[in-house]
Amino acid sequence: MKIIMVHGINQSDKDPETLKKIWIDAFLEGIFQAQIPDVLGTAKFELVFYGDLVKKYMRKPVSYKSLLDLQTRGLHAFLENTSELCANEQQVLINIAEQIADDASVGHQELLSIEAISANLKTILSPAALTDRFAKAIVKITSHYEKLHTWVLKLFAKEANLFLHNEQYRTEIRNLLLSKIQEETDEEIVLVGHSLGSVVCFDALQHLENPFKIARFVSLGSPLGIPIFYNFFPHRYRPEALIGEWINFYAADDFVSAFLLSNPPYEVCPEIKNLKANTQYFQPHHIVSYLDDVQVGKTILGIS
View 1 (cartoon, rainbow, N blue to C red):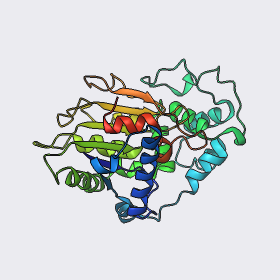
View 2: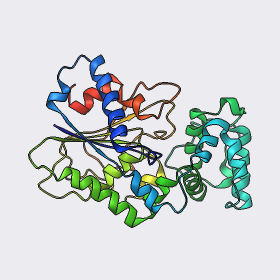
View 3: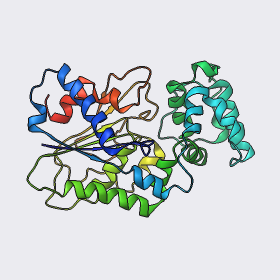
């Protein structure tokens, strides 16, 4: 079995071998808890690292200050970065900042007008309370406003925005993954994509030709349920190269996996299986939190 792992954003400052070790150690911790023996003797691990391409294509050095602001200061960080928005869009943001709550009455498929901000968003959150739950709420609410959501992506996830809008960059990353897959044709291959890495995997699967087949695709903390990501793919059916299941793990407080992967907007049969991972409450989106979950490890190995 060959397990090919694809990381998400904010990894360009890491050494590829160190990052690979972090993934494998976390995975083995989950496997140890599941009491599964001799995994290293039966599985081979490969990491697709594209951090050097991030540095190549980003016009400015990668900075995580705005992401840090988002995680520690919440919506108030947005109010200092609204120069690209028109007055109406700024007002939407201010309304959310004052009254944000997870409004379950709005379906994630709907596109709303500015006047449709719900009047029952009653809960006023202080900066101390705005962490991952805040981020999940902002993803859900801004996803209904295309320009606002695009701006959020550009401000707080520049690497994701780069992947969606720079074809050359996207092609180089895709080719890195395809080359790993195409090294061998007679081995069971499992794709594991975390965060933006799941988008990279889905993109590559749509370009993978015979005779290469993927036994399983496991997405962890995937943004593919967010409209700006799934709308990027005109065809959202099951990739022909995927012969096994697509299993998507999400966490309750993981803002990136705010939306589950369902039909529609996907046209996958059998449907994508959404499973809840038990991640650490203080870092629900972190790759280590996902990989050391027992069920995630067993799923990657194909053990029920």
